[in-house]
Length: 561
Image (cartoon, rainbow, N blue to C red; front, side):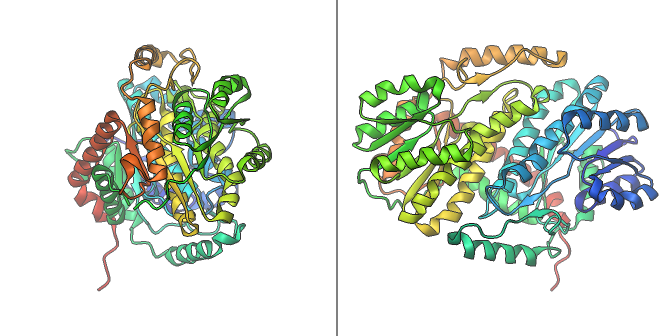
């Protein structure tokens, strides 16, 4: 992109990065439409006085409202060149699903849907997503916030693949700890202590965040100047290829390098669970990996409660004939319903030792075409549903001070594939939730692991397990036709054997067989394609960190001796 005058629309400009970015773009001679919610709109008056146009925009508003705002915004200068998804919230409670996800994920998706038609019409434009260091590292009590930031990176990268043939771009900026108002009470949702076991942890984290607020190492003014350089292709970005992700801050540089090296070297911490008979509860057992895992655990002499939705419940009869107990369970049911199923399940054998969050499906289609309901349904099955399942069973596990949570992730938790952005986003988020949960429950003798399987013959993208639709936007018709044909061709020719995958999962949980003598893995890729795909992502990330290191690490305040 040339250094011509650009028109920016930035969400969340009442404070923090959004405010600083508005002022910096104005100083570069660009036009800026600064937006904010009604309750903070008065704070935009001084931005207007310095040359910005201002509009009221709440990213959590319905799509129709956002489309009306988009019309007004485009009329001001005749175009939008840069759309910045900056508005965000921080939640310090892992189960606060509505607040963080609506603001950080579903809201930006609708904002994109409102503005992308104008960009596609002009075959020019850049979408900027403000991610976070938490998109790479999950910390206790920050599980959902981290999950949304993992998801944002996946959405941005997939979107770029889908829109780049149309002359558009997407980038995820991942700042470290910058001196902004993100951690103030207005922007952070905290719910106190609801469960006594977490009291000390919650209080310690809250004290840390209060101490960190306004003492962060990152200089926001330096950070926003780099963002503008990258978008305009000038300054520190001159001569460099456009990055799909850009970390900012020496702290995030270190974290990403550590995470990429960790994944590439595949480190395992020591298994402690004995090979006693275990009681498993597995969701989504009517086919695929859930079915194979049920049979593998039964063959080891364990007890299994196999679950499935009402429409596929009849497929569990042969599992029952082979020794499994079966229960009807839809992971998207209300928490009250799931709690009742949990009571029934625990009553069968008096305990649940292993809970496997396996149920899932693939939502296929270009990101811009995905409706709010389609986006929510994918997250509901892969994220919100498992969170409710965990809440139903964790009190029982905490009481016994033993238990393992298994999350079935995917290679798509690392790679980003066009037309399955929502699936990729939820699998990125799954890893974040599992790691944060492990940090929270390990003091009680509990564990959590994320199995990141490659493409196994599980029919996940077969007709019964994916939701797709006819292309709704002409610009994407060729992409949809091509990828649909690829998925159909791949579905029965995938490299992974789900029976072998299931055997290894049982080994890891029980600490025997292939896992004997190894430490319990918090993340376990399975499949040669997963190994290769994750390794490639990590190596590319390490390479980019090196290429941009001087820029990434230039945003800190000077250190005081």
